[in-house]
Image (tube, rainbow, N blue to C red; front, side, top):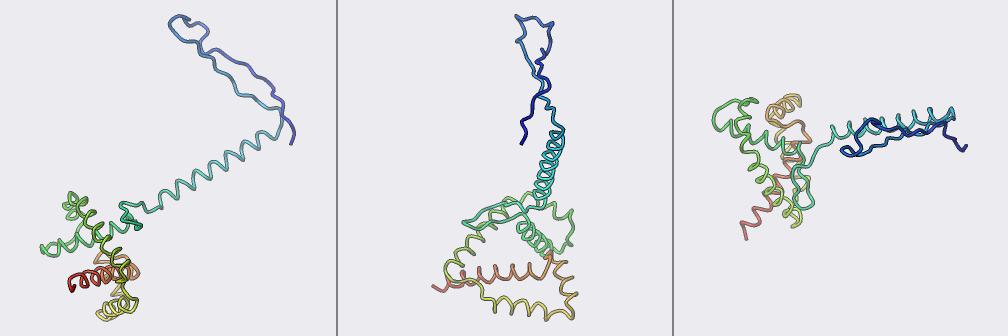
Length: 193
């Protein structure tokens, strides 16, 4: 690697006509300029790498699913909260005989903090159930999924019903069933004691 020699270095005063008693003296320096032809290419490469890392970080930050609550070792993400919140709102509206709409959902917004607390308590019960060996068995979950599938003539009809219920996919439905069965297994065991 060649040693690069500076072309010039000149300090300049910010304002040479200032009053030295009332204003502090500021000295600004110019950066060293290097004579080599390669310094510009190297600077451009560094800026390109920095820019790429910045764009990647911004992109990843937008796609990331932020954690809204932590219960033990389990994180509740924004998408999990939104899914459960949507199910809660739809259920509440259905009980009142009202159709779902984003405007109707907005009427429930003041209950989000309480709902998050409830969701965290439920997750604590699920965690305790898992630790106690009450985790839903895959056969139980698949039986519930097959029962749901049996209520529809086609898989498209099932997917449409899930979407209308606020459940984005069959895998999301499986995850919800797994949590519900684990929760119920633990509660039933606790009640029977």
